[in-house]
Image (cartoon, rainbow, N blue to C red; front, side, top):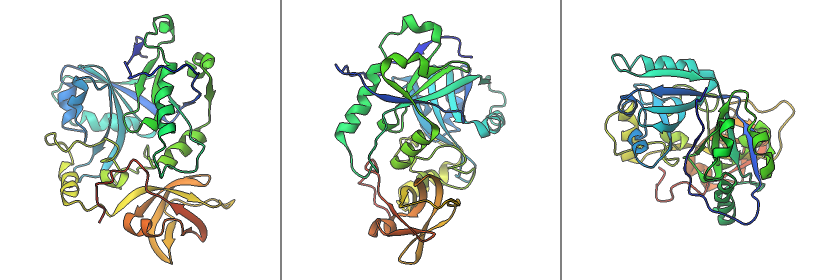
Length: 337
């Protein structure tokens, strides 16, 4: 268990009105604690992001662990406790695999890896609009304002043993809350206009944003960081030194050739039989992508970017009309080829 309450300072804006937010228990996410005086130096050679950012004011970062061919093994969110202790959030299905992966590289390193019996929750402001093709400043402002529901000092809540970390990927993804396994974060925040939502609401929110998470959406060894938009989601450092799998990632970045990326997709309807993973997405009879994941009519698909954006509103998935779009947060200066 986490042995203390830790509130991470956030750039909080105070508003006179109450902020409505959704809180959801992510039962498919787990926490590993890594500790030791060499932990940051060790991880620097194993992950795609610059772990040394945690030495300064940054408290969380998004990253990938790659194989030696440069393909994604696991995605992770990393949270700083101290310069000798971090928390690593990962998909519960591969928690033990990640432990084995890390241990095979930390021979002679004084690093302890401890699986924690910790609940992972997400707090986010849900957007009822159909997509995130355009930046909505009012919605982004409301996402920022949701941080005002967490007081700057929570000493009176110390018995709840909660940890708060802002999601480093996008402001619309809100923040993560770590709690004891038996803790009910929704109950803790009940007096702050909180809605305890189902997994479908958070997943739908992510899919509309175009953000994948976990091994079911990022299968082990099957994709590269750029195809999952890791470069746009602050998940890769191109200024740090060498790390496992760096060569392919660096080559893709500096050649500028990223033909396929995960993109949001919205179906006009969903058949009772559902739509299988890897079902082709077509435009004018030509295959230009394949389904990655669907939650009702919203999902993600690995798409050929140029072909998709030529005619994004007239796609087909098993003859079902569908559409896609370029999320507003993609780096517009990056040219797809």
